[in-house]
Image (tube, rainbow, N blue to C red; front, side):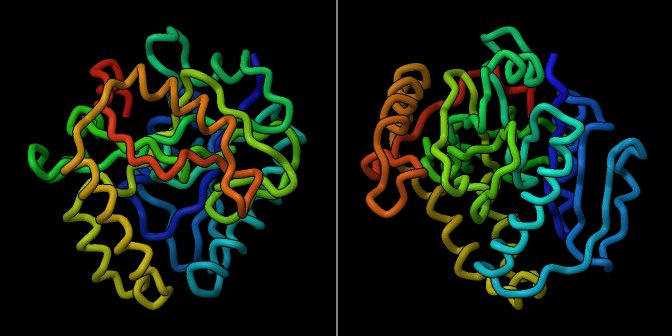
Length: 278
């Protein structure tokens, strides 16, 4: 089995960070998690197990674009250090979960250990949204996927989340500079940032985020909710298989190391076998 760890950076985000620690701790071991808190005003969460490696950092300055660039530069440097100890490093935001299909019968560590990762690998991006026609406010005490059944197949979240060599992640982990990406079949990156409309609305009133220039970014999140609420949900197996093929072959003209999918908005129904994972 390969030695694998996971890292993330968070600020005022216990809602998702709790789930992140719970999931990756279960899959990789709590001692193999590295959480960087953005700002000395961020105390170590009282709920966070002592075995999780938590570092409280100086607040990264700047607005959204500059801040995210500096954040990923920092995390790329931390990943390079960790690769002296580990065979692979998983880098995600706190609302992103790399999940092998339960039908494969193996957990995340076993799946990645047999993945043949040379530089990086990606899971197919599934942007989970609240279908406001039939889904209510999210209950954080219950698994997210027991309450949300629809996702948008998204090139934006097909990220090179797993690395086996020191690299430089681009903003938001969306690409690796000077390297292509490699999607593995039956591996998915579930993004939950748009999982609840009320939560998005509440974050519009977060003064810290408004001051950081996040208002426009947060506004975009309503689009995923609108799409999954209005489009017909398609078959998971058929369309995830097609999406892997399309995204592996097609590139946008402005970035050869990012996936493209002809701007298709494909909503899929997430199978019941995923319900208890996150």
